[in-house]
Image (tube, rainbow, N blue to C red):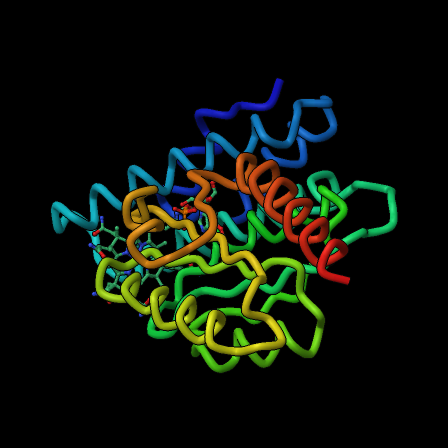
Length: 219
Ligand code: B1M
C-alpha cells in the first residue's frame, strides 16, 4: 500500500523521486487524486510553518515546491479528465509581483476538469495582461491568485481595470489564495472567492452561468 505519510515527508524535504514514486503507487492502487493531493498540501503547510519559524529558507521551499510539482504532474490527467467539450473560457494568473503558482495551477486543473477552457497567464501577471487576455479569449470568468500579503492588494487594480473596460466590464472576477479572505474579496470588488481548488470549480460554474444568462438576456 502506498505510504502517504512518507509522501508528505518527501515533499517536505524536497525528495522529488520519492514523492513521484509514492504518488504513482497511490494512482495505481486507485486512490482518489484529491486524497493524494491532500498529503502534499499538508506538506506545504509544514514547510510554510518552518519557513516562518526560520527553520528553513527559500532554497528549501523551492525544492519542496519542485517535489510537489513533479508529483502533481502525475495527478493532472486524472484531475483534468472531464470528457465533455468546454462550454466556457477562463483566464487565470497569479497577481503581479507574486511567483507562487502551485495553488493557481491546481485551480486551473480543476477548472479544466469542470469543462472550462483555461487560458493560464502564469505568474507575475499585470492587470493589463489579464484584461487583454480576457478580451482576446472572450473570457466568461477571470481568476486571480495571490499568496503574498504584499501583492494581494493588486487584485483591486485588476478588478478596477476590468470594470472600466467596456468589452469585459461584466465578466466575473474570482479571487483566491492563502491570505485572501471573503471579506478581502468583497473589499476589492471581486465577484467571488473560493478557499480551495475544489470549491473554485463550483463557484466558477455558478458565476459563469449567471454571467452567460445575463449576456444572453442583454442580447
Ligand atoms: Co513563499 N511564502 N515566498 N515560496 N511560500 C509563503 C506564501 C509564506 C506564507 C511562507 C511563510 O512565511 N509561512 C510567505 C508569505 C507571507 C506573507 O505574505 N505574509 C512566503 C514568502 C514570504 C515568500 C518570499 C517573499 C520569501 C523570500 O524571498 N524571502 C518569496 C516571494 C517570491 C515572490 O512571489 N515574489 C517566496 C518564494 C517562494 C518559493 C518560490 C520558494 C515557493 C513557490 C514555488 C512555486 O509556487 N512555484 C514558495 C512556497 C512553496 C511557499 C509555501 C511554503 C507553499 C505555497 C504553496 O504552494 N502552497 C507558502 C507557505 C504556505 O502557503 N503555507 C509560502 C500549496 C498550495 C496548494 O496552496 O497556494 O494556498 P495555495 O492554494 C490553495 C488555496 O489557497 C486556493 O486553492 C489552492 C488549492 O487548494 N487558491 C485559490 C489559490 N489560488 C486560488 C485562486 C482561486 C481560488 C482558490 O480563484 C482564482
